[in-house]
Length: 547
Image 1 (tube, rainbow, N blue to C red):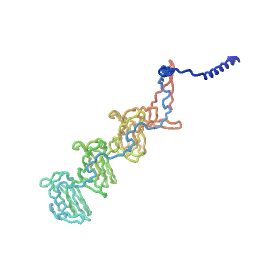
Image 2: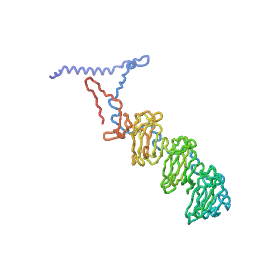
Image 3: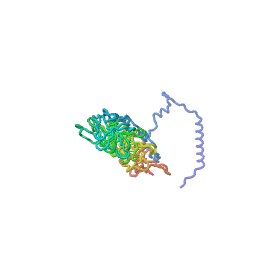
Image 4: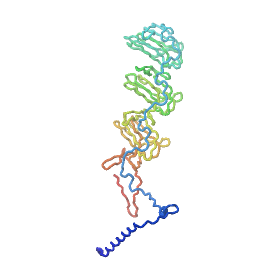
C-alpha cells in the first residue's frame, strides 16, 4: 500500500517555514553579543562552570589493534653497546716488564777472575797441563793454549763458584780446516777434587774458526771446583776461560748461549742439555694485565718445541702450565707469543720458558700486555687486523664483556662470528645477577661457526630489560673469530621478544615483515581491547588474522 502524495497546501507550508528560519538566522547574526560575566577570581563564569564539571576521563580501554600490527620492521641500533664491542681499541703493553727483558745488559764476571784466564802471560801459569799443551799466538785471536795429541789435558786452578754465576764460558778454536777438532770439558769437585764430571763434548770437522760455548754453572754454585779440558780430536785451542753472568736477573739451565744477530740484536738461545729453561726476574703484573709476552724463534730446520709456565705464590714455588707443548714457526722467524695471566693480575710472578725439542731463541721476554681492552679473556686470545670492519678478536678460550645495562628499548644483542681451524664450536651466554654468576644460554645451544664467511647471531634479551649483565662468548672447540659483539638492536617496535630467539627484518612486495633469526621466534603484542560483549547463551568472539 503506497502513502498518499502530499498536497499543494502542504508543500507551501514547508517552504514558508524554511524561509522564516533563514530570516531569523540572518537577524541574529547582526545582534550584539551579550556581556561576559567575570567573577572575583577574574575568571569568566562559563570557565568556572567548566571547571566544576570537567570533561570525562578516558576509560583506559586498549586499542582495538596491536601497536605496529603491520610489522614495520628495521634493524636499528639501540641502547649502549658493550665497551669496545668492535675490538678497535688496540692492544698495548702495560706496567713494567721484567728486568733485562731485552737481554741488553752485558755479560759480567761472577766472582774473581781465574788466574791467567786468557794466557796473555805467554805461559801456562795458573794452569796444570798434561801431555802436549803449548801457548800459541793467532794474529786474529791473540794468545791461547793448544792441546795436541791423546792424553793432553789442561786443568785450571781451584776456585769457588759464585752464587750469581750462570755459566762457565770459554773460547774454543777448531783450528784445522781439513780435519776434526774437539775437546771434552769436565768439572773436578769434592774432596781433593777427585770427582770428575763430564760437562760436555765439543767437536767440528774442517771448521777453521773460533766459537764461544757456555756451560751451566748453576749445579756448582757455592762449591770449590776445577775445570779440566781434555784433547778429543784434531788441534783444539782454548782461551778466555771465565765464570760469568750472561743474562743478568735471569735464571738459566741446560745448554744455553748468548747470541747476537747481524743487526746487533742479542737474544738467549736454549740448545738442549739437562732441563733447559729460562726463568725471568719477578714481574709485578698491573691490575689490567691480561698476558705476558715474549718473542721466540726456532733455531733448527726441525720441529723446535717449547712449553711455558708461570711461577707464583710464596717463593714462586707454584708452577702453572700456561702454554702446552707448542711449535716454533717452521720458517724459524721471530714471532710474539702471549700467555694469559689474567688470574694473576696484580700479583708478582715469574715467566718460565722450557725447551722441549731441539733449540729456540728468546727475546723481549716478560712484557705485560692488555690484549683485548675492556674484555676479560682466557687461553690464547688476541686481536687480529683485516676483518670485515677492521680488527676482530681471535680466541680458543673465553671473551667476557664489561657490564652492559639493557635499556628498556633493546630487543636483542648481535654478534658477528666466523670459525678458524678445525671444528669451531662456541656458546653465547648472558651473565646475570649481583655477581654475574647466573648463566643464561642465549645462543640456543652450541653453535658451529662457518669457516668460509662471517655470519651474524641475534639473541633476544628483552625479558632482561633494565638489568646490568655481561656477554660471554665461550669457545668450546677450535678457534673462533668475533667482531661487533654485544650491539643492542630494536627490530620490530611495539612488540616484545619473550624468549632468547632473535628476529630479523625482511621485505617483499607486500612491505616489511619479521622472520626468525635462527629457527623460531616468540613475540608478544601490546595490549588490545577485543570489544566483545559477553551475552548469555551466545558465542561472542572477535577474530584476528596474522599474515
